[in-house]
Every structure is written in structure tokens, then in C-alpha cells.
Length: 406
Ligand code: SF4
Image (cartoon, rainbow, N blue to C red; front, side, top):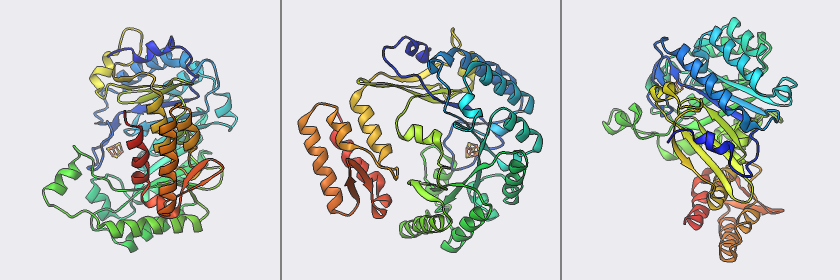
């Protein structure tokens, strides 16, 4: 289906989007655990991609309803693989199409994902001049052996160099991504990775347990018996150590896998987790527009660069998935993502809004059951997970999702 977002421009009652996600689909090489849409960059399609991206942004801009953008996040792929002159074109277009006053004043947030090997003073200077104030660096591990297991191509020392270059360019909000539960990784090695990342003085860490997504090379290797997955108890120990070390370093857990100094939380991801409206551009990018009272529209651009480059008549990207307003789905998604947050979620208010007394009663019962098991607590209408509950966040969410399934 093409032109999904074009149809949304005329949809009744949706709220203007204050967030924008852009997906850049190029990488050096495909990491074995990765199921994001990305292609090995042969440098010959970057210009065509940016040409099409600018058309898409131009078509999409009215979805912001002229409101200042609060967050922009450029992810991928490896956005910092784009040539500097192409970055200048993208940043110039964003400044011309959207109101970036909040971002430029520091009240908003503009993040770019960065592979440390691509860091340069020139690129970071251009990003900073274009309003970028936050970089999310993919480190994953500081042990060359584990990077090899993940088939991740960068020198561990490049992370520190990239952090210095970012600071030199005046980009002060820095986040580092780490992966734990890598096959063969010990608790002591994970402790060293955490200490190294914290020692860089960054204000945000994302720490994800390695997951085996279908259709990844890592999963195929696991099935072939090339290695054993990390033991579940060790993985739980690694997670508990993460929480403890981050807390001691002043990085509080504000989402299951995300830790930040006060005020340094990723506002863009919080917009996702709080089920706000956001625009999305680039192949495989997914957008979300909330229409109060009736639910939300969702769409996903085609995850194929060839389709994307062909585009559609009015400049929008071809969409492969479009879901119309559905109040129950929005409640289910709000509970699922909200429970993963330290702030929790107003389960009673959300389910109550559906106007179904039996459902509201069942939701209250589930909250009581989870509290009795020591996994959740309720204060002032908000359900939050306990420390123990964070270990089983997906299981707790499933209880509510089962209830909301049509
Ligand atoms: S750099 Fe990131 S997006 Fe690219 S293949 Fe590796 S994990 Fe995937």
C-alpha cells in the first residue's frame, strides 16, 4: 500500500506529531545479531537515498501541524556513514521544513546514532551546527573477542576517541549501547565492560541482553551448535549487576534496559514508550499518529531500499503496513511499553477509558495478583514494576495483553 501517511494528513482529529524518526539504511557490514533493516554500503546509493528522503520529509512536514519539534532521532543502519555533504543537505532540509526552535534552544533533543569508527571532527562539527546535541554510540562490548562473536566491526578503543571528538565538537549528551549475555562472556568481563563505559563519563547507557531474532546469522549459528546461548541465571546476574553499577554511578534505571543521569533520559524513546505521535521517514521506518478518543494510526514504510527509492506519487514512501485507529490496541501498547518504565502506567485509567466494566474489573484483579507476587505495586493510580518485576517485565505485560486481545 502506498501513501499511507498521505491519507493521514486528512484523517480527523489526530494530534500533530512533535517527534521525527529517520532511518538511514547503510552499514559497513551486517552484524550477526542484527535484525534492523540495513544494507552493506557500497557508497553508490547514498545520493539517491538522500534525494528521496528530502522528498519524503517535504511531504510529511504538515503532519507536525506547524508545532515545534521536540525530538528528532536519526537511527539505522549507521547514519554516520552518510557523507558529510549529504548530512549538510539533510540538516538544511530539516531546518527549512520543521520548526526546530525548541531543539536549538536545548529544550528539545536531536540524537544521531553513531558507529565510533565513523567519528570525525568534521562530521561532528556539521552535526552540531545542524542542531544535533546527542549521540548514541554503538559500543556493544569493549572485548575484541566478544565483538568478534557478534561479528561487529570496530576497534574497542575507537569508542573513547569518538567520545572525545564529540565533546570537542560541543556535543555533550552522550549515550553508549552495550550488549550482555554474549556467548562465552563471564560476569567479570561484563563488569569490566560496564566499568569502561561508565568511566567514559557518559550520561546515558543502554544495556540489552543479546536476543536471538529469527533470520539473523547469530540465530543460524546457534542452531548449528556453533556456541551455546548464555545461561539464564548468569544473564539475570548480569542484569542485576547492571542495575547496581549504574545506580552507583548516578545512572538511574528509567526503562528496563536504559539508564540515565537525572534529566538525561532519551526524550525521543520516551515519546515512543508513552505512545505519543511521531513521524517516520526512510525505509522500514514506522510512524504513529494518535487520534484522541479513537486510538492511533500506525504505518511502516517498505523495508526495501529499491521500493523506497521508487517512492510514491506525492513524495511519501510506499508503506507495507497500515493500521487504522483502534482504541484497544492503543491501550494494550500503552500498557506494554509503560510497564517497562520506572514511572509505570495508569492501567486503571487507560482500561477504564474503553468503557467496558468487566475489562476494568479484570485489569484491577491482574494488578492485585502481580502485587501479591511481589512483581508490581500501585500508587496514585500508577502501576509500577518492583525490582523483581523488572526481571519479568514481559511476563507481567502479557497478563494484561491477554485480557485485551480481541
Ligand atoms: S551497525 Fe547496527 S544496524 Fe548496522 S548491522 Fe550492526 S547492529 Fe545492525
